[in-house]
Image 1 (tube, rainbow over the protein chains, first blue to last red):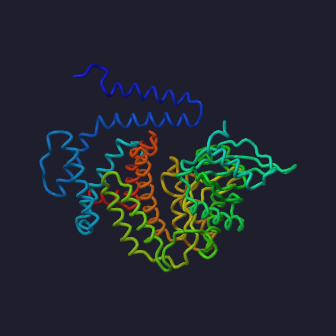
Image 2: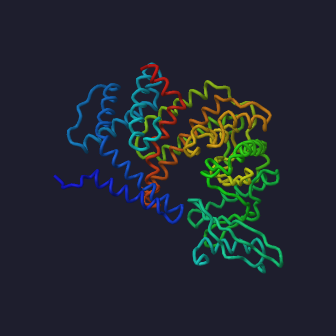
Image 3: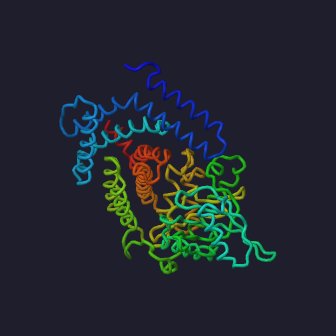
Length: 127
Length: 346
């Protein structure tokens, strides 16, 4: 196990540094650069904290649409299979498979998944 | 120092090509903005007459001569009609591969955060929405025949619904740029197709479309609009495309209470346009266009992230834009009524 500071604590320190540089920037361009950098660091922090739970939710949503599939126990395999399942979902939407009565079911899953992505990427966009 | 950099040197050459070999050309000053081009302010003096110019230079490799010619031609037609836009003076290309567009310089600011939030501009905002409506209506009076000299201008077939045409192009661009699966966008394409079938097709002839009609492309001062910039995206199509683009969430810069570019309510914008144009706007069709325009913005966020990931333009801010796809998907779902549908189905 790694020593303190934890990854989250290191990110917080980096984020504070970037925000300070933004506040004391010499011009608009430099301020923008540091604001974006601070924002990216905040995204990574939220992702470390929340993404595993969101990926499990997404997996459960896909199970509800397509039938249950055991969750791969190793993280890289889990992420890779989730990507494949989303690819498959996308293709099936594009061919019209969800145009009829299953559309509400599909939309509930899509809405929940997108809201979770936004909770990490741009939480201010969620009222 | 400026002369040493490539596009600044081109700006001086272009100003001389316009003003003549004997003209006195000032040291160019680089203007803000533009990921694809560099713009330079430069003065050309002959005797006691000085012409204030902007020279926009596309670096070799990024220059698209046909596109620059097309923009020049659209500007020429628009300026002649009294639309607030830069007077185009000369278009050309260098043997070294750059191309340039020489325009008359117009005073004003382009920082959207000032017109949206600044107290000094409070009285400019209502005036500006009327001016935008007047000028957009005038742009839309330009017919395909009027811009027949513009090379390679894209256009739907005669009689084809431009929404159907642009939706097809948007999907082609999306398939080319997509970095990972987006079920929300796949569904949104199905939704638009159903809307196209359901809605009355527009009963009007195709017209010139500005193609990037948003607050960030407007030059303004405390009196309101001074000039409409960035005509790179001009094409033939339908009025509602420009009307909807001004309303897209990303170009409100956080002022989501004022849906028309962060300066006016959606209804104030639509009715200003109706007054200027003298006919009604079909809100349902604008709504369908707005979903498509958000898909386009999502595709642009992917394209920018891809430019970084491919190593073409390695910049962290381009990488970060890739994470704005998610909020755009959320907006697409909201606009297509998904939030209410999910709440109802509960």
